[in-house]
Image (cartoon, rainbow, N blue to C red):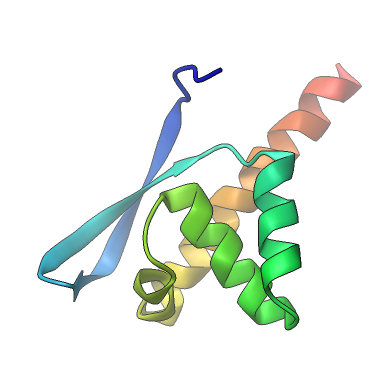
Length: 93
């Protein structure tokens, strides 16, 4: 069953072009357990797992994430970490 999933935007400080498409932002959806399972099963290295996980959440090719400037990569990491922190805050209320 598909349902609308809210997304959060990360504006890239250093836009990238991949396969003729310019990426100025990445729209990230909240992670699902299956996203983590897919990334874990298809990658051995922890860095590759993280990149694959990010690509799944942004619904982009893995190479788009690999081409990000490190500052933009860190911004995506923070946004994903923020998804998990929101759940921790809500469970303490």
